Image (cartoon, rainbow, N blue to C red):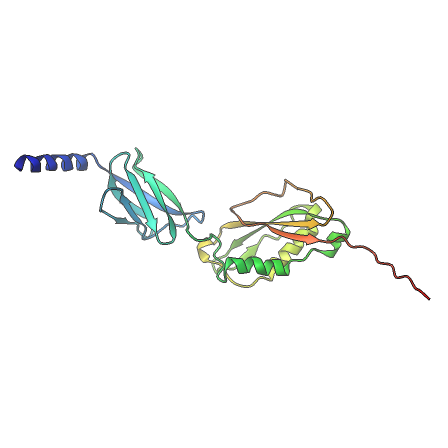
Length: 226
């Protein structure tokens, strides 16, 4: 019995001696904010460590051990203990990145209801894919970048700016200063939609595309009959 206890003690001591202290900094992706109260533990160990307000946490592990990071709002992540003793871990959120406080589906519904195919654009045969950029300020308000990116789609871009400015509601301030890219494609029926690759440059988070269809205007002549 003594021999068994001595053997177990030696094995545990050897494992502890071989362990290193790792400092992790947990970052939410892609907002870049630090994650507080994330649970971090080495697989096979009952010890759980909690990240502080700055996202830092320390764990003891052997080289090659798997370290688990979990948080109610984040997807569970795993990293392997490596030679680097201090490293940063980016973890994705479980929920949709865009936290429109009235529901992201309502945001898209409102926008689709507000945006129109400009009459002048239809007359000029103007169509194409545009990219609209916006960010969130410290109060959760949407700030739209209203700089026209391409003269060929000027009327379409201005229509998108106008529609976005009419949408009410606020966004999660967790994503302030994050840039979002909203692709909107204006299609004219019976006309191939041109692609302007020079403006299709997503920044930050790429949102779902919105399609707007226009119908080419025709002149109807009235014929008098006796």
